Amino acid sequence: MCLLVLTSLGLMQCSAPQVTKTLTPMEHALQLRDDGRLAEAEQEFKTLADRGEPRATLELAETQILRGHHADALALLKPRATADVNDAEAVGLLARALDGLGRIDESIAMFARRLTLKPDDVAAAVRMAELLLARGDPDHASRVAYAGLKLHADEPRLLVVAARTMLARGRLPTALELAKQVTELAPRNADAWLVRGQVHAMAGDLADAEAALRTALQIAPDGRDAQSELASVWLEQGATDKAVAILQKLVGALPTDASLWNQLAAAKHKAGNSDGAIAALDTAISLQPRRPVLYRNLAEVALDAGWPDRAVQAAAQARTLVQARVQDVVAMPELDRLHLRAIVAQVMTQRVCKHDRNAAGLEAELLTAAQKSAIKTTSAELTAAANTVEDAVRAAVARCRVAPTPGKP
Figure 1 (cartoon, helix red, strand yellow):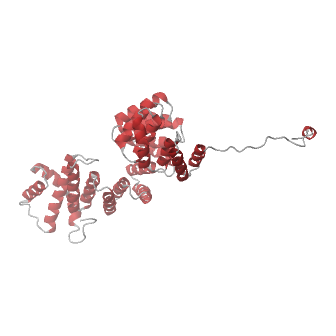
Figure 2 (cartoon, rainbow, N blue to C red):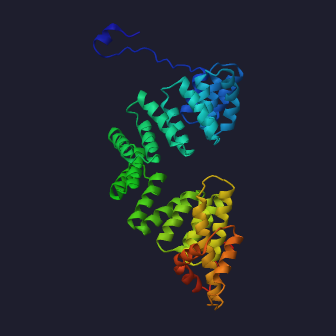
């Protein structure tokens, strides 16, 4: 105990003894998770769950999701969410686990159930709207976003996703209004500036789009979507070298992203590097071999570059995939026209390279070739196709017996 006289003279201060709080096992496990020690936290939550600790199962599932062990979390949560359909926490975690496994439709349904139980869950509303957009349902996504905004009018995440839904629906003035609102509310929100840039780009306001995207990248320099969108803007502005450079950087960082390779191909094609574009498309196709748009783009590039054989093969593959009704469908009439143009260029090139300049029988040969590929056409359509491939034929003829066809046979 402090002596009164010493205390009064300021020579001694009394203080209460320091007590170190002893954490409960649950608190310790939560602290481990907060510190990023997820594997240790998961093990402690498992032990607590085995002992019957009430919250341990949910915390264990949360930790497994954070570790990317979505299947384990799903196995843990599904029985609980089935047994109690009103267990909002289990339902929310189950939605996240399904999302992590890529089971989009089931995840959307579970997020909807979560929002029924807990309508003010901003994260659930945002993610459900994003998934609906990814599935190609912007109308439903818009309804989810606006339902959230009724409860949280100034929530930046909801405003961003609402702007994206308006952009996907082609409602540019509303999308721009929302994007401006969120950049004013949250000027350091990179996603807000990204969507604002996308809206400006869609409206053709390229200077404003570039400014918004540069702002997004100042906030988040590694933002992939902002870089990709900026490359598209530069392409529209004719700055092909800058677009190619940024896309080369992106595919270097994300070499398994077929969409980026496809975008790089477009940039290289516009820059006049057709062989580079073909190589980029070959890489994209190796990553997503059942995506029709990649073959369509390959056919276009190969045709323009004077490789009609390659164009015919790629167009035929695109049509086959569309007929099989795979996702990312391209309109069949468009593919039919592209395939026909490639066939016309191929036949005309073969004739010229064989020094056969006799027009006799050309139309019949073209009709037969089209028929073999199940393309219905007329004399007028053949003439129109021939008029559009003159440059392609000249380029192909210049290579006769000189260079092999690039890429895959």
